Amino acid sequence: MESSNINPENRPTPTPALFDRITQSVILKIFIIFFLTLIMLIPLNMINELIQERKGREAVVSQEIAMKWGQEQVISGPILAVPYDITNETVETTSDGTKRTVYNNVTNYAFLMPNQVNIQAQVEPESRKRGIYETVVYTTQVKVNGDFAGFDLTTLKIDPNLLKWKETKLLVGIEDFKGLSKNPVMTWGNESKEMFKNNLDLKLFNGNLQIDLPLENAEAAKQKFSFQLDLRGSKSLNFLPLAKQTQIKAAGKWANPSFNGSYLPNEREVKDSFTASWDIPAFNRKLPAQWLGEPFTIYHFSGLDLNTEDHSAAYPPGSYMAESAVVAAAEAAHAAGSNLEISSDLDMVQINFLPSVNNYKKTDRVAKYGVLVIALTFVSLVFMEVIKKQRVHLIQYILIGFAMVLFYGLLLAISEHLGFNIAYLIASLATLLLIASFIKAITKNTKSALLFGVILSIFYLFIFVLLQLQDYSLIVGTVGIFLILAVLMRLSTKIDWYQFERK
Image (tube, rainbow, N blue to C red):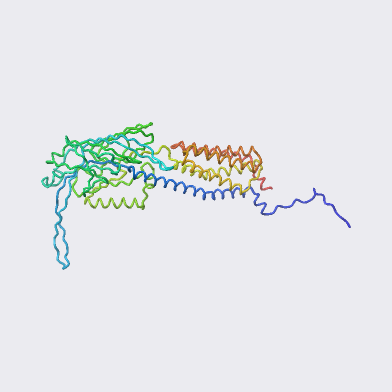
C-alpha cells in the first residue's frame, strides 16, 4: 500500500469565500459606513426631540412663574376720552311684514393722544428658579410725565356742544394688573387722583387704569400730567409710543438685555448694567392724534419673542395664537367703525431680559453638528484602520456611533444641573475616555487609542469654539472643515488604494 506525503509548503492556498471577500472589502466598508452615518440620524433626531421637549417644559414653568409674579408688561397711554351721544337709526321688519324704524342711543367718544410723553424706567431684573428651571423676572419703577395740546375742534368734525366735558376720562394702559405693587396716582395739573381699574366698556388697552376728569371745556384739556407705576413683570418690558413725541430712558442691572421691536435705541450702553434711550416721533404711529368713534382695544399683544430672527417660530401662522390675533384685530377694527389700524408687538419698544446662559439653545446648536462629527470620526477611524492595518468590525463602528450620540444626551442632562460649559467638558471627556479605551481594547495598541482620542478632542474643541464665535461661526466653521478635508485628501494620497483590489 502506497502512501504519499504532500509538502505543506506546496499545499494550495484556499480561496476565500465570497461572503468573506465582501465583508473584508475596504471599499464596500466605506459605503456601509456612509449608510451607517445616515442611520445615526435616527437617534440624533430623538435627541433633538428630547431637547425640544425640555425647552417646552422650561417655557411652561416660566409661564407658571409669570402668572404668579407678573407677565410681560406693556405700558401705553395716556389717552383722553370725551363721551358724546349719537342716535342710530335701523329699519326692522316685523312679523306681519311691515317695516319700522328703531332709534338707538349710543355713546361714542372723542379720543385725544398726548402731545409729549417722557418715560423713565428703572428696572431690576432677577432670576427665579423652580426645580431645575430658571426664568427672568423684574421689578420696575416707571415715571411718566407729559402734556396734552388739546383738541383741534376745527378738524374733529363734531359740534363741541355735543361733547360731555364733565364726563371726560383719562386712561393709561398696562398688560397685567397682577404686577401692580402700589396704587398708582395721576397728577393732572395741580390735582392728584388715585387711578382705578376701568370696568366699563371703555377699554382701549388690555389692562385699563382710569381717572375721571370733569373738564369745563376744550381749553381745559390743555394740561400737564405725571404718574408713576410700580410694576412686576417677566421676560420683557414693552412701551407703545402714542404721543406726538415720545422720549424713553431705561436703565437696569442686567448684562444681557436685548432691544427689539419697531425702534432701536438712539443711545445704549451695556456692561454689567445697561442704559438706553429712545426719541420717537409720531410718524410711525398707526392712530391719528384725535379721532371719533366707539372704543376699541388699540393694540393686540401676543408676547412675540422679537429677539428671534424668525418671528413666525414664536407665532406660527395657523396656530391658535395667530388665529386669535387675527380675530381680535378684526373685531376691534369692526367695533371702531373706521379704517383705523391695530398696533401689535412689532410697533412697540421692547426690552427683552435674556437669561445669562441658555443651556437648551446651546445644546440645540451643538446637536446640529452631530452628523458632521460622527461622519468625521468614522472617516478618521477608516484611515487609521487602513494605515495601521488593524481591523475594526462594523458592529464596533455602530457602538462607537451610539457612544457619540449619547454625548448629546449627557450634555443635555448635565447642563440642566451644572451649566453648559462644565457639562460640555464632562460629557466630552467621558465620551473620549469611553471611545479611546474601546479602541485600545480592539487594536491592543495604546498609540492608536491615544491618536484617536486626540482626533476626537480636536473635533469637540472645534465645535465648542464655534459656539463662542456667534457672528463668525459660519466662516470659521467652513474654513475649519475645509482644512480637515485637505488633511484627509493629503493622507489619502499616501495610501495605495489599488492594493485592496489586487488582494
